[in-house]
Image (tube, rainbow, N blue to C red; front, side, top):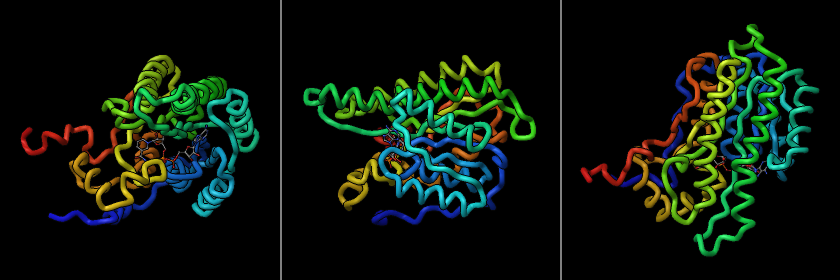
Length: 283
Ligand code: NAD
């Protein structure tokens, strides 16, 4: 059966948006584009105040904040490089100054700097580690300190705080030509799980979402031509690319009390990419 191109229509939301996060405040890092943008808007639809963190795209970040306000929630765009401890501290301070507290952190900011291992520069290795792994560590540290200080407010949530890391299927699938990216996401998996174990008794929930192939600027080369898109589909049992809004919906659920007993897991949202698609015809 021929596959549609550029891609099939995204599935429509199947139920009215519930205000599952009413009165809560969220920081979403790297929220001026792609998955972070969709998560910020989905959290806003669910009733959360949203801090739209961005790095170098102020106009786009302001647009996202405006879109969150159109959902009836409050929003603020704040510039910060997540790999810089001083800028991260200021990001959290500005959040508390504006909204009084923090309930949800989404570690979304991430980059790819790809090269064959023999050509990969030290700077490419280090920058990917700094943004994809050190960034989430710094943000988690600030969030946990705040959650400890705030404690639980039952009027908002039965948890003292929620952390969601946007990982990747490449936290488990090796990826030739991308050793820095795959290593950063594998590291993020054990950062998430170790932290989840450490802070669980304080009712701080920590989980990850691992997207498969989602149509965003980070992977334009994989979906913008017929040939590339067909090659991509060989890796996806559902035979379609994912949309950023699908990650947004998963983030709302993981941030809400609906998932309160879900702790220290990675939720794969990948159309089956982690199901060894090479075996789909029997191997
Ligand atoms: P994207 O390029 O649109 O988003 C990445 C965002 O991070 C951008 O807004 C960018 O400005 C921001 N950013 C980069 N460096 C930063 C820094 N130092 N500080 C703060 N923000 C910074 O791509 P995306 O696909 O939306 O990626 C979002 C996350 O999803 C990334 O962590 C990525 O690894 C992950 N992911 C994406 C896919 C996919 O198929 N698109 C698949 C798996 C995982």
